Figure (cartoon, helix red, strand yellow):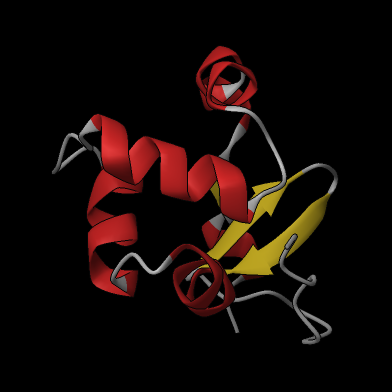
Length: 84
């Protein structure tokens, strides 16, 4: 199941930009069953995910593992200018 986009008018610094929309890390965490703080560490480069985590994140975003890996550079945390 694909997570829904953030409902906030201005995404906060804990939002993921994906597919032209902002998705909250909390929503991604709920759908992937991966701890929200761990996802944040992955996005900031402080942790390296194993294959199980990669598969879970890809599935939560409605992607195959290959699609997720091929597009890793396009996923990013919301720029600080969007912070509330």
